[in-house]
Length: 291
Image 1 (cartoon, rainbow, N blue to C red):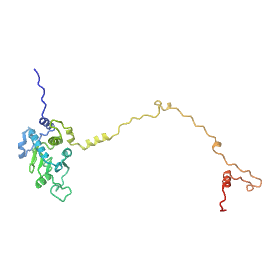
Image 2: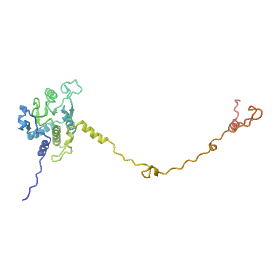
Image 3: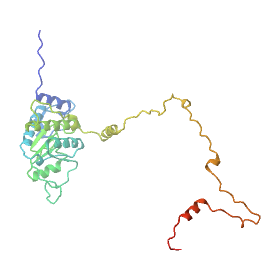
């Protein structure tokens, strides 16, 4: 009996497999009344399971909204949670949006006297509960908001809620990676059937200790093997010994000045001859008129 070849998975099926591996479908033990439409079922331990098919459809809807904005700089991607800060920065790098990682400064979207004041056309958030302040300010400024919502997330002032697990570092990184790839495909920067060469691991949160150890491994100089300069064996006794330096006689480099002869009358009567060098200098001097 002939076996049929395995069918190639579509892009949607591959994305759903990746989201299942990243545990995007796992919710919490609580469920908001506005999130009930996205829940598939409830496990025996009380955890709600999110419908991954609806998550993928909402990601596609969010990508269409992002592409509809002409200037990518008018889009702000924000995350106050540490697990989403790296994903936010990578998403902004590949799509051209602005990233606000860390604590939100109150009044960024409403107070025009602040230096960090901005009026974006679209706001993308990681967690509506943690990022409640930018959601309220966006509602006051009539700014549409896209947010990743868990089963217990409040949906107030959220225009497009993407049902997903927003508490795991792999889940957040996977969602931003898929959303960034969809945006680039709709902008025709990536062909529909082409695989994106950016790994999803770049969007995952990394522990500070892990990144520090990796940097130290990259900076550490390679071990250099010590090679002796001599060509002999391993023993110092095999080295050739240089011949000793011959001693120099004292008379060759030091000659005492001649001692004048002492007459019978004493030292005062002894005639001392002038040194030859001084006599030569005196004889060479010409008269200049100063004498």
